[in-house]
Length: 124
Image (cartoon, rainbow, N blue to C red; front, side, top):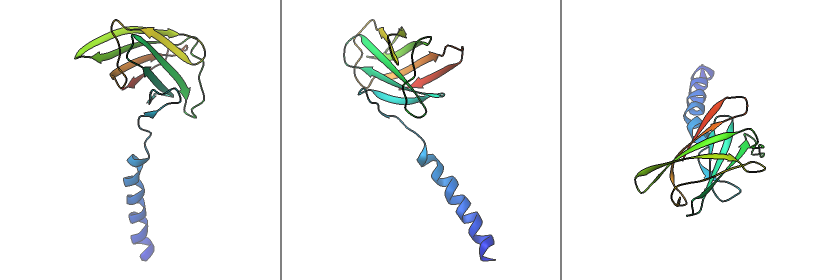
């Protein structure tokens, strides 16, 4: 009898705790904001200049070679969307130059296309 009451209570607690275990935004190893993007983690590094870098890693936080990837950034600066491409720049980095300076902590999204044609979106 006690077992029948205990099992539903334990299950309810485990489902209630699930959202707390989600992997939210954090600081990546390059000092940028790292978020989940499909099967990858994407770290956006912006430092107040037009130069922007995006570092890719897998679910285990191991760098993923950026060769063959492409991305398009849509970042909001002073209320206006700034759109520009990012291309492989060696190692796990994609880089691009925005039409304006991109501040640290900028909001927006990056659409990432993998070499196999699959795509993912990173929201900042």
